[in-house]
Length: 395
Ligand SMILES: Cc1ncc(COP(=O)(O)O)c(C=O)c1O
Ligand code: FES
Image 1 (cartoon, rainbow, N blue to C red):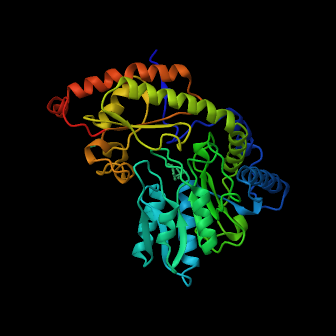
Image 2: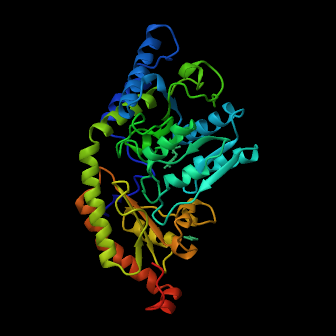
Image 3: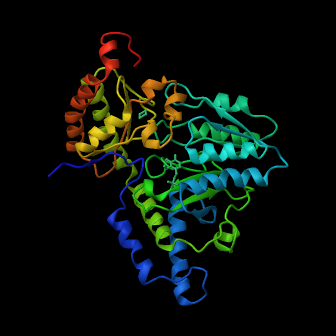
């Protein structure tokens, strides 16, 4: 049988058995509406309350500061639009970065059309945002700073505490998209001066379609979904009961295992990175060498097209992703790879391998065994490679 290796955990993870086991009764047995006053409803409410406590504990927040959403995208939209609309009288300026997820970038672009002004901070060649630059971008109209905790493509971890401190000192709200960070690296909303934080369950072995927004007590923001009185009048709609239960269990497990699991992943990641850099020519590692997510490896291979690399890996049973045009369904190469300064043609030859707790050392061996041959074969088919052999190197 064909070996199958899943190395696309930044896209999504499987749902852990313990998580699924906790969720299942909430479809058929404990199915009450958490807003109902009867026993069925009260049981459901209890489960939502427990999930809220578990989520709060994982972030060092209070349960009243956790609001469940349909995922990371909704949490990002709510944080940014909610703060923008509620603080218009204070100002119309938002600071973010050029490497955010589209859930943040497209929300900011929408707000620009509505009359807000947005500064998109550049990053260095590792994808790092500089707190000094954040400080310089602040004007007396700035109402919100939104900087992602860790980048989903290249894995770079941003100086969140420092940026949060700058925002706090100036009385500006600070939001962080922590979708790739929560459950993988330590996150503490108090210690890191965070006012709003987005998370998503399917990135840490929970179910898809459920997430949360942490809103620090006292933060002024408008509701995003209007309707009933759920989530203390701030997020309408009957709760995704089983999903919320799953999120609560998944975040508790992820944080309890964080140290051990991140150590294990980082060791596998480092072996993968050095293996690739040592056996393949004209390749570079994207993202920061040390300030990076434990499971993330991202490479650019010169003279190769990301799409064909993915297809060849898929034929060998390896699931990966790239920042290339074809996979994202748009015509532009990844905005993140362009922002770190990669030329267009190099950005096209990128490959993201993201590890998770179902990966083993044998999986790493397998990738290191098949990848060099695939790269070699694709390069032999590339006219660019033939022309440039021994010539100028970009990477
Ligand atoms: C950094 C980041 N933000 C936001 C999202 C969106 O989260 P969701 O898939 O839960 O809507 C993702 C997931 O791809 C992400 O990686
Ligand atoms: S990677 Fe397919 S068009 Fe660039």
